[in-house]
Image (cartoon, rainbow, N blue to C red; front, side, top):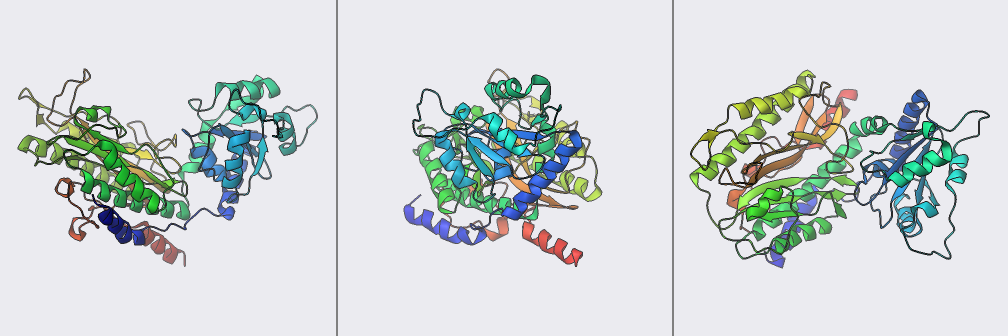
Length: 465
């Protein structure tokens, strides 16, 4: 895709993106108050959440740390008062800049520095001093600390450090506390995710125009990455996905230097983060050739699964049913779907994962809110979710069963009260857009479930009046 075409996409899509929208200090204080109320109810004096390049969500939601650098870091939330971010010397400089929006304090600890460095002029504090400044001493009563981040993310060293200083019985994992609070989104959060989704649509439109035989995967990804940054997305939820040919079996494979060949299927995916909140867009297209009839059937069946899940989500939201009904509707659709495999047998395609997950300050690592067969609760009152339906074209031994290695449709959608709407405008089937330089999504081809969150927000506001 030519530079002029890329700039035209940016100019045309920019009005859909509110780059200046952020989370204000007042909202952070409301979050701390909610966390502190839950802490008091469970008898905790302090809550600890950690973060790194991989797992940014907890600290991002609590303190606005969207851009961690080099070292791990943490957030200490007292039962009353202002939280403190704890960090190493190098990452601490970045974190000091990040937390201006939230107003949390910052303390540098030697325990958080990267290994094998000597910071001669850095002034490090001690974890005990930070804790004592946050928790008033109580005679005869130990400090109780809740570890709010997942054991998959929190470093073992951090757990041992806290348990060694304050006693193993007084430092306990309680990941549900923070996860449930993050699941319910504020109007500002839902609007931010909508703006990130608009960036995703724009980046994806540019990438579609760049998909062609003879082009490297990384060249296609470069178009999407450029558009995302030009529209205000500083980071992404995952490395931009461009996986062609047999690389489709990687499912989430980031772009490589592989050259796309004519007739290969290419899975594309972007997840831009705007001021900490993530959008999504993923589709699969064929490069430089029309789909065959069996291939068309494969994609039509996938699109049918998308419709089954979204319709079930809308009805479940409207009626307040347990969200496992959504998963059941998708599974029922699959049970009635038979496609001819490579051996001429009629079989049901396999899905790689559940159909809906939560999102927010990460693309999919929020830790709560995925819709599974076991989810007995209804969807949240105000939630941001992603529908991610996909078919695997290969079996457990990586042998190809269908003519397509992997096909996916993933979008973000919001729920407010009993109403839902898909953020993204991109059509479900974008095959005819692959290899075409377009600066906007055809108006008569918009996602049939697209509904701007602003419409629902305005309606809720009128109800309150």
